[in-house]
Image (cartoon, rainbow, N blue to C red):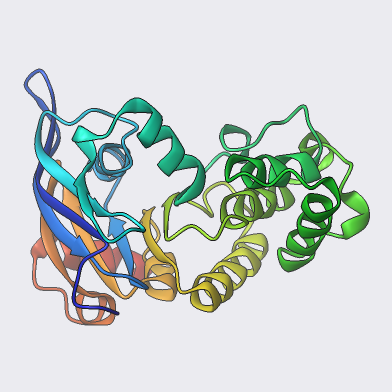
Length: 258
């Protein structure tokens, strides 16, 4: 990791009238670092993720990102075209429901190839070969390259969504409950795959999850949210093994009791 943050969030706030989506959230994310945001349903973690990733306008605060040329830009100051390009190339977003992150009416290969075309690749043979390679990397047989995601299982769709996001070698990936809704055995396989790819590619990531086991397996640092605010943060193992806030203690205890 370098000494310069890849992403800096300062006093980020999103209000819905009197209701707090998230309030005064600040943190830095460094290259190669994985941050987990945890909390119960309604704690504000997905609202925060959507504000950081420009999918939702913030009510206050700022998000700055270090571009590939080394310049740090306030994301609110980017043009719509710049923001869209960033989302298609330098960032990835893995949705809980793969259908939200895939084009379900085109083939698996085309889903991966679209991201390559977004960064200017027009060579059909290279695109198809790279798509086959990525299908193999996410444990989908290359023979399924022309099949549509509608013919895939839930776990295969999620792995395809991961391939679509990582093919352009993004520097930052957002994940919203990436294992939610999958069977336990499928979750374990997917988590192992994610951990391997993130480590191999040196990616930075922000992972939203209610599952503390997911947070422990994937993240270096963790932020615990309640009612839109961060109530505890620190190194993942430290927070989960020795939680200081009563709410975090309850979260950890609830897992131990299962």
